[in-house]
Length: 232
View 1 (cartoon, one colour):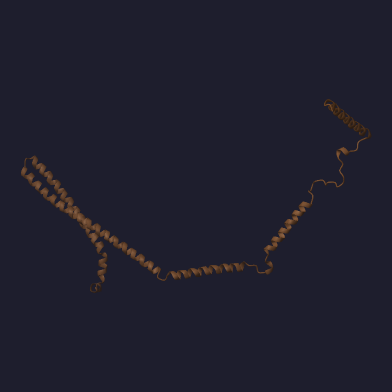
View 2: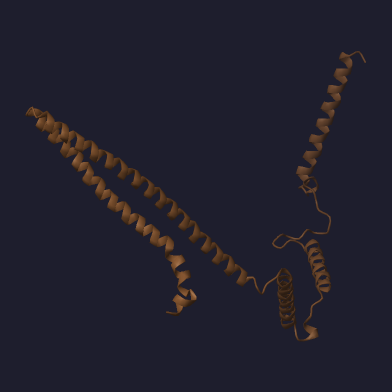
């Protein structure tokens, strides 16, 4: 009752008006469709009657049947035109209602985004990101501090380690050069006798000297023969 006096129900009626119009149009189109089917049946029936009466040579009856057929056809054309108009109007209303619902959804989405961003601006976002970065850096510093050795003596000088490692490597190289290879016989330091200097028995030594003298005599003899041939 209060809505009747203060107009509270008008908004609800306006909201449901498109839906009601769509339902009414569909209902009326269905009714016209039934009327169209009935008229189509009458047109067919009157044509059949005209053919039957004409077959009986009843031209007057056949003529009247054709007149009724024309009347039904005229009504049928009007019904079909009305249905076309209503269907076009129904399509327009449905399209407009769809656009309206789409706009409502977009408006609600915009309102939701506005509420989400209400307490946010670019300055606050930058400030928050800076705070996050500071906390991350602080966490890394804390982690480094916790991981640092507790005793100062535990710290190692990397340069000193490198120098000691180089000294060990050099000492190892010197030892490899000085030390003889293992598993090989040592070389004697004294004078090594050659095979030619080997001691022979007395008889064999004399024979060897005689053979050497004979070889020298043969060489000299061959040389003199060669000089004679050449006229020297």
